[in-house]
Image (cartoon, rainbow, N blue to C red):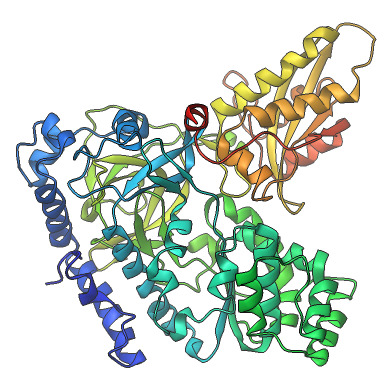
Length: 618
């Protein structure tokens, strides 16, 4: 019977250790998956009991009257299901330096910043040192599964575009940074022993470079130089991989010059990056000529298989909102398999895809029972025509609704994920909507459906309807001095550009003939961006992962025509409301056919690392 990983026995399942053959490590990893999924119910009980017994004296559990109990029944009876806002007072205390056991008996080592936001700022997820062990365990399972589908991956390298993001410190001195930045800077990644499955074309120094241009340039240069050794390519999100290809389109001449001469462009000033790259780079005029010839062609169709001819698949997330990038990836790759390997968040790492070569629309993740304690809140979404407009998920929020355990979910049913973690989250609503697609032994496999309430997303940004409404309201105030008002609006995430950008369709009501100057609408664009959360603004300012926001003015009566179309497709005229976000291609085409003018944000919105209140205290 496999035990849940502990700090003193995680190594028992360290499938990337160096003491056995590669085949032996693969078999050990696959057997671990088999064991924990076959005994999912028992493993889950033991995980919860371990979490609760460790934290029997923490303030949060004592306050709710758990009184040292570690069984599921008592836990569910006395501990409430919570959201981030419910925990924010405790998290603020920890961030301000209170080191007492508020949520967890072990010291909080840092905060992991979520792409989800609260009050316009990134959510802060507490974590402990031990969680790095658990994340490493899940990573160690990925390639043994992949090797079953694509043998021989140990014979070459992976070209992955991996980046760190900015970090800040709370008033109490704890580091706050994204989970991948934390992992890449940890000894688990930086000092990892040689393993053919983690043999990347990018040296660690290029990944850890804080300058996004220098990091991208040097990683791409190393990937091009080792092009015939590359067997798999990828990034975390599909959007990030496409940005790398766009960077190649804009910089291939410089990259070819470096490969031809065996030198590194002077724009790369980071000394550790230069040293690491120069250990790899030698003059290769033949390779430079080949790359130059391919990149100089009229079309970039199939550029991945042209430049990296041995590539077997692209490893990126293309589920959820990332599915909008699938056509672009197919264009660049000549239809290489798109592989989604794992499911994780800032709160916890959850599971992996046991059928990685499936179609993107069929991706399902098997939740590994040792990662945390799982519960599931049944979700009943409204169905009908309006879902074509990306209507946000509405949940039944009855607090007394019974949550379902991991082994008790029903095939085809949708649930919101609720987790209890080793790091101090108890019955926490993650906000992900999952659908049960099948089972691996007794462990369910889930399709990722969507993030709750998100209407717009280009990269890691998540904008919900309330935030969009408030931003549009702020911007529309710029029209008042011209006796004009906003009659109706909707939005669209346009990924036809790289990077993608938000588009707002505005129908304006004007009371006088005086035209509104273009600068006013440009100010409206900027006001919207300034009103958005810090994740969006970081994407615009620092990561360059989101392009300038665009407002398209449509002719009068456009939204009446939108209603006519919806009613013609079966929507009830009595219940119809203008959608606040559109995805459905015919609707986007209708809106674009009515555009009379368009305007872009003239500059980037303001953004700085850290939370506003921390900056104010500094």
